[in-house]
Length: 472
View 1 (spheres, rainbow, N blue to C red):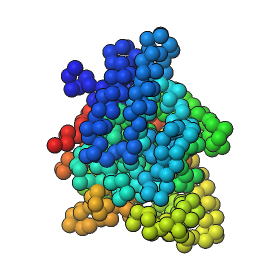
View 2 (view 1 turned 135 degrees about the vertical axis):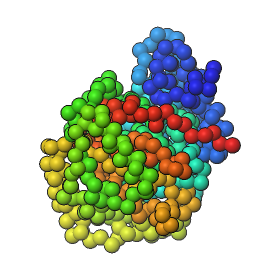
View 3 (view 1 turned 90 degrees about the vertical axis):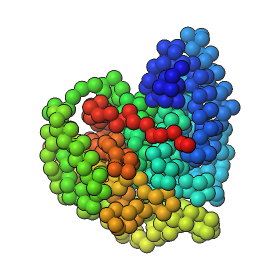
View 4 (view 1 turned 135 degrees about the horizontal axis):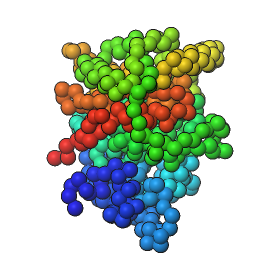
């Protein structure tokens, strides 16, 4: 079997196709993934825990189902992994912290749905402690390494979820996104990261950070791969009231199409301020390509551009603090050095501040709805910087040290505040060989249209085909 045919080199969709066709067995796929994890996870630190016995048992069951001619799910036999915030039955959940550990008896809804689709869960992935931070640094388990550059961060908080895909340890993962924690790691690691419409997929069994903003979403090599994962996890769940209005579409069969007639808005103010020059150039070329593919690209000026990040802070930070207040008071010295001070920021907001921010959020959502009457998608950079230092969280740009923690979620927070879907797509590399990323945001519950546009763009490029070098 050539290197390009090895199971670990394939994306979700292609591996699922080959398993269904009998070209690769579920056991071969899972064994290959586990072998690569065993060989390379010491370098990448993408996984906090791996469960080979569980995974191999599930692979054998998948093998038996194939032999019996049973009806197969779309992810039959495909090895996947999830962030160590998700409940996975029979495992130890840590949330990336040394002050929290619990034995899990029941799968999170999204994990159960992946299994129902035939997937094999091989382990739990590294993250910034309690999913609170955009860089991905974790002093307790060691920070996940970026496969494109071992001294650069993977982005937070779903660092291991992006690293595991980019390193070809598994073809797809689930992370969580509260202010950008799926899309920022996707940007840094050169993969696709999808934050679906809020309420489209259940949060049940995911350790909370900000319940009104939390999403569990897929990371993978291609838009089709991400669409397959979304298809598996989407749908209402009585244990998560936010999903009561979930409207599911077919996210995989309708990907082919073009961009003719699609109206794409580009908000230059705020979203294009203080960009790394290579990101500015690459995103500019990506947006030009959207126009070449038939989209009508126009500049827009959202009235909320300068304020949405502050509104996100006023809502998210107090809630984060209430979730972890006891830990901060009793065990703050045992939390990550950059997590405790940020959690304490939530104490500085009053109830009046919070209620005003709630009203501002409602107004911004209404203003976004008005904006989306005249356009179909919004195109921006995913992050203002490429991957920052895995030690300091900073990056030198033009002789100036930029603090990653302060700016990395500047663009991604908006879609969490409004709840609309957004996707991060590879769009090139910096002069130093680091990935850059285009973000597209769409209309509520029109995730299929967003995925179609993203797939059309992706197929006109080859960025999703690039792979990082193997570690020495």
